[in-house]
Image (cartoon, rainbow, N blue to C red; front, side):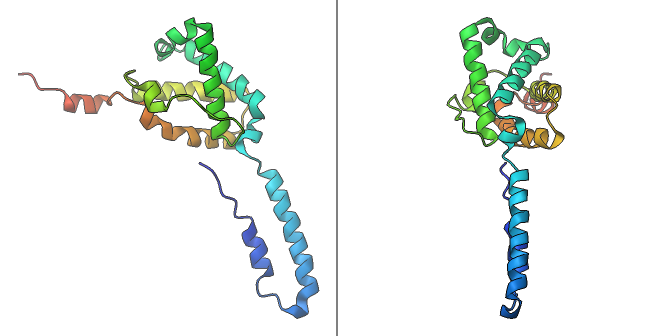
Length: 180
């Protein structure tokens, strides 16, 4: 999700209705508001920059992939990729570009859609949740702030519907044929 800064609202509110007799005060207030707006813009950098740029994203992805490889709940999904160095490098590159682009960075993700990438894998909610835990663990290792962590997860979270392809246990039970 991209945030839209509405920092101009205070400037408009400050300058609206100021009579020409108060022109000098108006200019002083506007200059102060402009300075304040610039400070807000500097303080509110893109998520990509606040994450530390591409170098930091590469470090997080390396740690994240290592976490997934060690996680017995999901490492079987990555076994073939982890066994092939070229395939692993391509996978990590796609992840870096995806996070970079999603966080407002200059990268472009050129891989398959999440739906295409995960078709037929049988990913369940618990697998997705384990993956998120492994990502959070990597972000925590590099001391990524709570705000940035939340923003990144909010940007990546909507992919869940394309990644989780197996029905939830309750849905599976409801759709299973009844045997007597």
